[in-house]
Amino acid sequence: MEEIILLVIKRNGDIVDFNKQKIIDAINAAFIEVDGKLYEDDTAYDIAYDIEDYFKYQDGNSCSVEEIQDLVEEYLMRSERPDVARAYIRYRYKKEVARNY
Image (cartoon, rainbow, N blue to C red; front, side, top):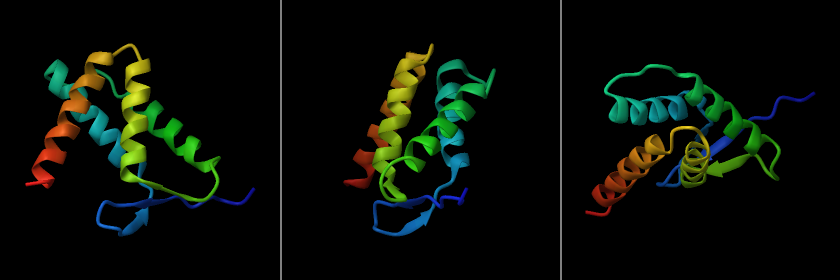
């Protein structure tokens, strides 16, 4: 089976390789925001791999940063930790506000 190379379209239009670690780091940061420290990282790894699989089976080989972040929110809301999803959403909103200033 041929290896599928996933690409991410950044907000500025740059195209970079998909990097699961960035998703894992963002989710873990939300866990730390809520819990004060990281008790487990299985959820972050599972979500990152699920998102990678999701995009591998879509038409094309690229996705936007916003699409990835939307999926992170969706997966976190369906997890046992919707409180972490809310922290992730708040962080994302703050970054958007900062970008627009």
